[in-house]
Length: 252
Image 1 (cartoon, rainbow, N blue to C red):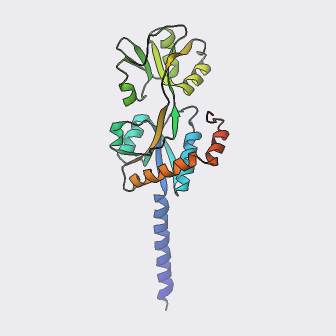
Image 2 (image 1 turned 90 degrees about the vertical axis):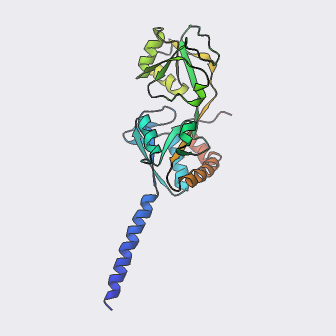
Image 3 (image 1 turned 60 degrees about the vertical axis):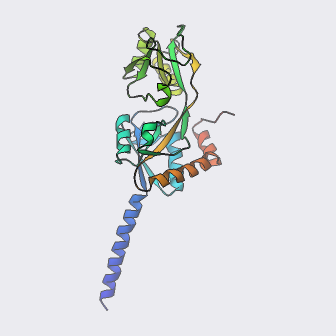
């Protein structure tokens, strides 16, 4: 008769062990670039704050997952997602080569407009087609996506910071600087360049950015389920409330 308490104890231990494993499987570790993307997210220590991560947390929560965001340099984020070290990556452009090793959620998490900035008063003939005569500045590590590659081949110069890019732009060492509208305005205002640079008349259509999952067992299905939930969330009052919270209401 004394054997029964021991059996129950063993069963309880096994239940706790498998329960702990099941809980671990419900955590998604998502890589994000270790730089702030103003109007989308900022890092406060190791905590990611902003509209984009809150959308991911809300949708993942509906699927029963807890999300942990990890900051790394962008090239490392992509590499770790592709080799399965991470469960996925947030806010990346749709590039054909990446589709071979990642499961994209087909509904974008966010969109952003790429703007080509010029020195105020400067005339740069540009209609969306690059030539080697155009000296284009980019932040080091920024994606040169499939979409831009089709626009031609400028002479590209990379910079380590917005301030360095602005300095070269106003000194006429580059013709244009390509970057996202919201963060460029933020940094130009912060550094005192808003009265010295301006957007070129040519504008890019909005660029969509996605969440993608690594090529692990079950992640193709996870991407499809996440897409279904994300579409429903973006059409829900909860999303509207989230937009109001970040004072980022959609255009009418």
